[in-house]
Image 1 (tube, rainbow, N blue to C red):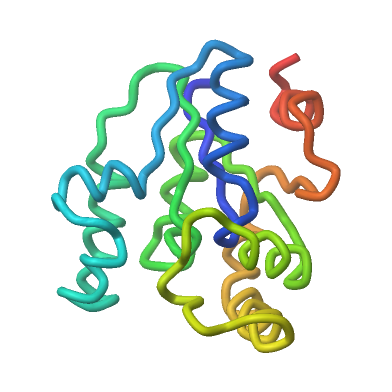
Image 2: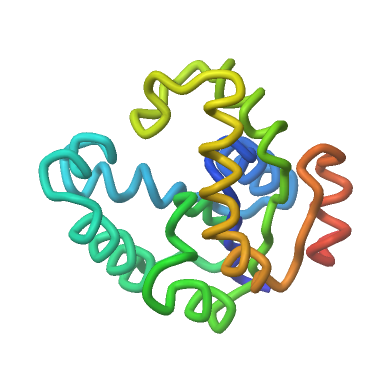
Length: 168
């Protein structure tokens, strides 16, 4: 197995688990949001504000498909990336895909206490945040569920990840 794409809603742990998994199995690690920020020379939030969602999603898809990935790489994707164009199909055709699944309530708890604020969530707390996430998950889950592997983010461990991906 050469490429592993981690998908799921913001706050599910794609980047932190991606780093841990890559280190544990001696793979490279790429965070596509960070790659996009380096290429665009601005943060995702700044790009979104300056150019809008449509241009952002096009750039995100282009970066996904044109990046030259080293052999054996774990890739953390943006939360919306699987839901646009043929990105989920492309990832399924080019590697293993794993959806880190969490409930809206669990995601809200993580995002409310996150060190890095998420511009799209600004001003949303408690029930408002849960409702927002619940609606977004309803839009996105059909894409996330196309992943080859699905893990429950609550019971996550390196062993679960490695076993699910056949990396033991």
